[in-house]
Length: 309
Length: 272
Image 1 (cartoon, rainbow over the protein chains, first blue to last red):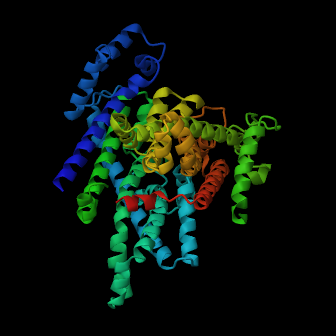
Image 2: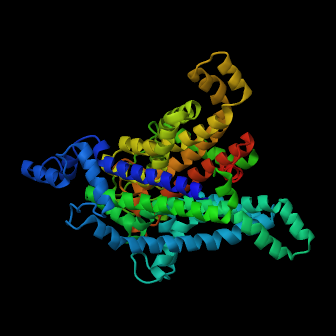
Image 3: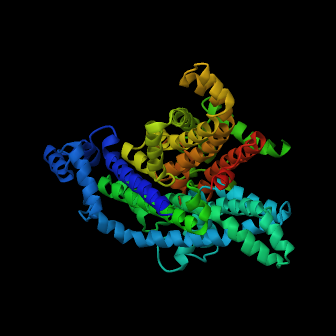
């Protein structure tokens, strides 16, 4: 277990280093002079020089890279070019909104996907199954920048039940969470169904039934309990799609989180803030996946003892 | 097969439109100030947008944008991706370890986040959009190709070819690629659906296709402001987008079943 843990942590550390380096390189990989792109072609030479010095672009690339990594370790990601605030402060200010949205979307996902997947698996081949899988197909095919406006049209403009946009009270999170959660629920319900179907065909299920356990106990404890393991991994992976999708969803609903900050920073050519946002979201994703892997290993001894995952 | 007919028709119509749209008498940029924001009921067709341009013409022209971007991106990401992934898987060693790290780093950026950042830094425009999506897209193909090569490289016919002195490029091309093609085709099909959504998404965020060029994503972006007075501006391009993505996904599902490609879910489970 300890060797497995060490390997896993080490590979995560490498990935974190790679992610930070790629984010650092983003500005330099793009063709053209980053300063010119930020200020526009008509900027005065003195302004360009000043910005160059602020960003440290005069230094050798290696020194800049080490400076960026060192700063990131200390929680210093530079300053916003737009309002001179520290990037870290901006991120912290916008983080709660995104976490709230992601948590609400996750709740929507689980509330939809678990019952739907279980129902589809238990009533395999029936109308329930067809309906659930039809929903799944629709859910993965509908882009959230279309679903969002549709929900606004229906629930905010026509029915007048919920606010159109912004973050003001519990009611305002409902539509963004539905928008963001639908795609994930679609993927997950399919996964719950196939995983549960597979587990229900195993020998230990037959044994559990044969020794006279109640059907509900067999399905939920022995079936779902085991079926949820692969679902957990998928959930971790898909949480990334959720975080990425949050950028679009936050823009649709004017939700003041990291995603909206990213888009605003791109529009203002505020590159240090763009870098900070991308870095934060990617690191959050790496952390979530590390966490799901650890949970998985805890729940399933085959992973940590078998050597490979 | 009959169940797939609607999906096939949608995809065929999409492709046909993309190829023929230049020859049709469409006027996606014609401004008619008398008809600003007129609904389909009042004006016929699909109504008019906030500048008085015909929505139907713009939706049809938008088909070309999404088609060109989708196939461009899938080609530009599948070819280098398969090449890099299969080489790494076949040659193994340090090259493979390095490739795995690179792939893991790219995969650590969730969804279209990296594409958003890249497109934002590269600046607007359809070329930059394709470049940004391909830069992110190759990883999926590389990962799949690598996994396939790893599971196939010890097959007897590959070992035999190696014993006969065939070099790596020949083995990859003649002995491995044909066996990998089924899962790759399925992946590329779903990839097309993904890119169509991604293109529209980036254009929705204002990072893709620039005005006056018609894209379903930017049409939705512009239409959202008039949601209450002119919902058709959002409904029409969104419905076209949704229909294409749904049809491609349906075809992808059917292909997967027909080619008997084990789903990722199964593979993950057996691997664990």
